[in-house]
Image (tube, rainbow, N blue to C red; front, side, top):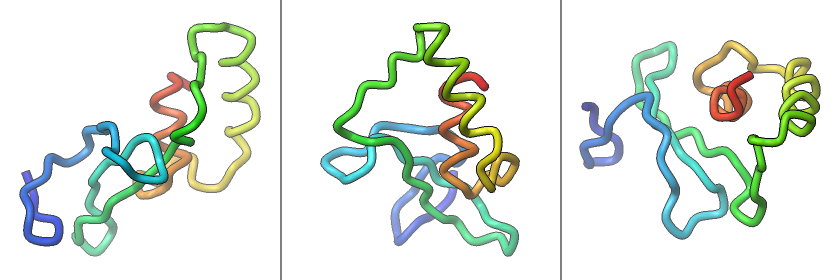
Length: 84
């Protein structure tokens, strides 16, 4: 548990974002130890990751995007949700 803007939040556990522009959010600590919110996913799209061809295509596309190993980037969490 950590504190973000006066509220207790759990770290490194993605959750649905209620009524926001992005579909998911996760709270992580950045390099300086500050808790930051990382939002990812399009709220108006279904991802259909159970279809193998779509999963292969997404993982191939997102592999070249910056932030593949940075926990504070949306790409990291999106790839993790897809299982890349």
